[in-house]
Length: 319
Image (cartoon, rainbow, N blue to C red):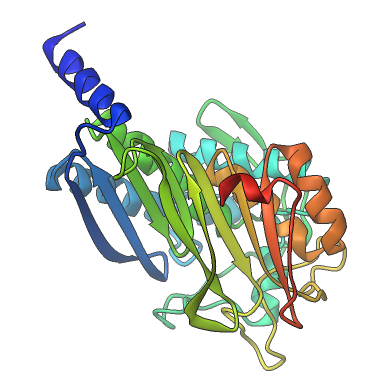
């Protein structure tokens, strides 16, 4: 073990005993059509800068608003094998896992329907528009998407969208990178998806607020997590098209899901896992969803249109 590792272990031991709390640094920037924040414990600006560099690289690879991104090159491949970044292979693996784990509730191949409903242009730059080949259909063939090393082949007509999974997985990867660079702890928040790892600023746990869907100036609750992720999906944001459709689509008819659930918050071991589970809240009965979450090593809360708040049986673990 080298001197640097010995020193880091000594500081971690002090944090655990409550005898020393390292400084924190935080930086908020625009990303993914919104805002994000990266906070590091026991590290400086260079770690934050490198963490942000990775976040922007992931956005470049996974955006559907740029024809040169990995996602759009795959969407226009028309069945041809396409070479992509290894991080995009990781994304595709997580998309497929989420589809299987949710029994199809989470479906990354509904992009053509999303575009048809009116969500083709970027919310921050209307000149950046998603284009798809005429063959594109929703839903596509998730099982037919195959990765061989860094070569990915998708069936003709199948297209994908990183969507919320892109936010959750980006948080996972950025946190891992910050720890690798020497941070004792890190929080990565992208458009409301929060992933934490390593030591919390107080040496115990990160305290995180959950926004009231009816008043974004208020919090419904606070939770404490020492590691893992908390994500909130909402049908009240990013409405689009003449009918005011929302982006949470049913895999059955590829239309905006009709449900009393306004927001769903999920706590899980990773951002990718939490994102993959949260979509089921909008296509299942609320009680069935909340009973299912603990079987998936997760916990959650839903807010209904009448303001009623319901939680899974293991929710109090995080209060």
